[in-house]
Image (tube, rainbow, N blue to C red; front, side, top):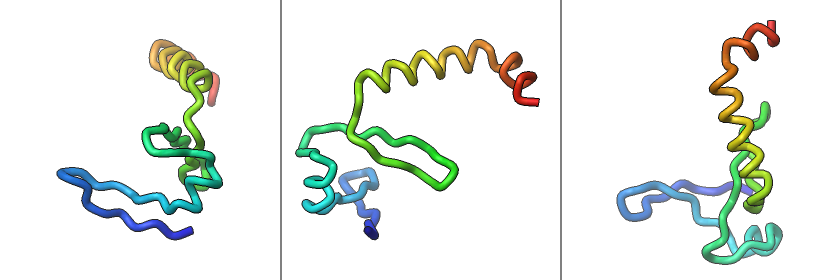
Length: 73
């Protein structure tokens, strides 16, 4: 599905068609979670549990950056 970036106030945004909102089981005011993948971005319905886990993972990655870099070699 092709989406167009448009101006919304002083920002830019994407208008999601009703069919897409229905498929994702989303309604106005719900949140989406954007996950970067090797193929691009994946949008999913916001999952508070996953978000909390990702916050912990990002904190660990910041604190242990050097160690993780060495492990990746």
